[in-house]
Structures are given as structure tokens and as C-alpha cells.
Amino acid sequence: MAVEELTSDPAGNTLRAALGLIPRGRRTALPSLELIRRGVAIDRDHLARYDQVCGFRLSDTVPATYPHVLAFPLAMRLLTAPDFPFPAIGLVHIANRITVFRPVPADDILDFTVRAADLRPHSRGQQVDVVVSASVAGVPVWSAVSTYLSRAGDSSRSGRPSPASSPSAALSPASAPSPSPASAVWRVPAGVGSSYAGVSGDRNPIHTSRIGARLFGFPRPIAHGMWSLARCLAFFEGRLPAAYTVEVSFKQPILLPSTVSFHASPSRQFELYGKRPHLAGQVTPG
Image (cartoon, rainbow, N blue to C red):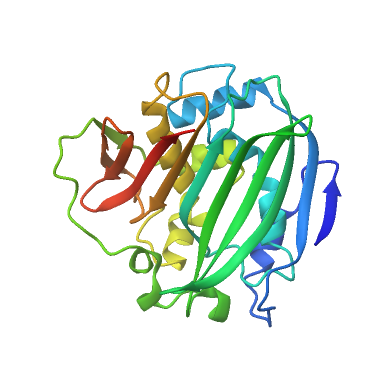
């Protein structure tokens, strides 16, 4: 596997993502490439803005979802590479697994690695993992696997999706909301897509633009999956072990604005749902 080390966050990801919508021949295999970015310092002002958008308390210990934001420019560099099998715009984030090996204080200096792995079939197309790890002085402190779906018949072939393969139809089948009483009910405002885009760098138009959302089969913008996961984890603040893994499956998207119900069990299983389920997850100590 080739290794490319960057000395700063890569620029031009948005432009490369847009150019990726131009129909052209693409490779059928993943690039054999690992990206490395060393010496990433945490900006406390940025961390505070992230905490505010996602519902966390202000703290000098970063939430489990925050390193995903720090590594996002590297992940986008990989997803927008000319030899990546799918265009980045139109990929659907369907699952995520984060492992926290120990708490990460805001004064840690992080080294990140990012690679793509395990291209495999899905009932609606193909799926691929983006594997990210963070270490401090050579010791792993955090890792994540984000699973993305490229839908058959969507923008990877024609530049825009067909109605039959719209994102809302591509994910898990709808089911009834959880019968258990809600632990919390949250109003998700229309502006959360733009607010999260501002702190995460994920400016996919399905989250920020009504026109962009409609081009990909949504009636209006949808919340970022990683925002919804972060909002759920904020509920557990102060009650999580020092080391743990959180796994989540993203189901039906949250159309903005919405009202959603959150349910958490004593074993730290959790769900977020409205008229249909939005996500289901589990926090496991260790």
C-alpha cells in the first residue's frame, strides 16, 4: 500500500467532489493508498462551537465524534481521488463504528491515518469502509470505521439519481417507532444542516440546500448522520466509561426541520426515531 503524508489539511475537496459528478469511466477497485496527517492540534474555539452545535457540554475532553471532524479533510481527499470507484457526492453514510481507547484531552496532538477498505456488495449497490485511526506519540487513542453506500443507478452512472433509487428508498426498510417511552424529545431546526456543515467541513448540498437535496431525491435538506450520532452521545455525557465502542446504523434520514424522539436503555442501546426510525446504536464498554 502506498503512503502519502500531508503536512496540512488538503484544499480543494469541494471542487474535486463537484467534478466527480461528471460522468466518466471509473476504476472498479479501491485505491491502495493510506493518507497520513501528523501533528493535528485541537482548536478549543472550534471544539466549543462543535460542542454547542451537537448538544455537548463545554469540556476540555473531546467527544467521541469530534476526531471524525478533524480527520474529515483527509477522508474527503481519499473519497474525491480520481481513482476512487464512486463520486463522493451521492454516497450515503449507512453505518459507523467508533472506538475510544482512552479519553482525548484537548491538549493532545493527534496523528491521523485514513484508508479505504472492504469494497463489497450491498442489496442497493456497493458499500465501502473508510478506516480512520488517531494516535498520540505512536499510541492509538481513537479509531473509526465509516461505511458508505453507492446506490446502483444513481449519480455514479448518470450524474443524478433515478426516483426508484432515491436515498430515502435506499436505506433500511421502514418499521414502526420504538414502543418504549422516549427518554427525550428533540426539535431539530432547519438550520442544523448548515450549522453542522460549518463546524465539520461536510458541505454536501443534501444537508444545506433545498435544491441540492432535491437533486438527490430528498424533498428538503437532511441532517448529517454524524450530527445525529453526536446528539445521541451527548445524552450519555458523564455516564460513559473511559474506553468504549459505539456502533450505529443510520436508517431513514431526518428531514429538516423535524421533531425526533430518543430512547436509551440501561444497557446503552439507543434509538432515534420520528414517524420512522432514523438510527439505532449501542455503546459497549471496553
